[in-house]
Image (cartoon, rainbow, N blue to C red):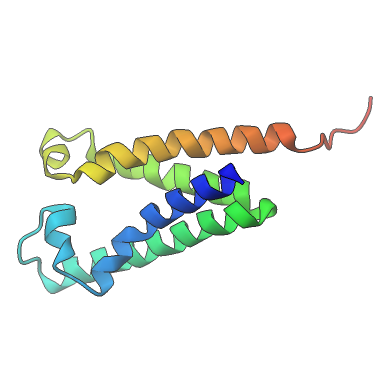
Length: 129
């Protein structure tokens, strides 16, 4: 039960960039962009939709065990790549919102623990020697 709650919270927070689809003004507070051009707005709104899909997959994994590891692994990969692309640049890091700087690393650790716990609880499929 606790795992479901934790994964649901991680999934909901992961999906929050999708709000930019309805409130493009959030792009300024989320990404530090003032009056972005139409293409940048479209790309970031698209990113928001992809984040919503990822958040939904994490929530799905909370309730459907076969989806848990693939959803968690996908989230770990995407969050790690985002951090690797942005945090290494001090200028971009300064422009990032606190949620990305704090939440993504915590989510990566939580999701890695979820995978380890899931794999430990799974019955071994190895053939006897």
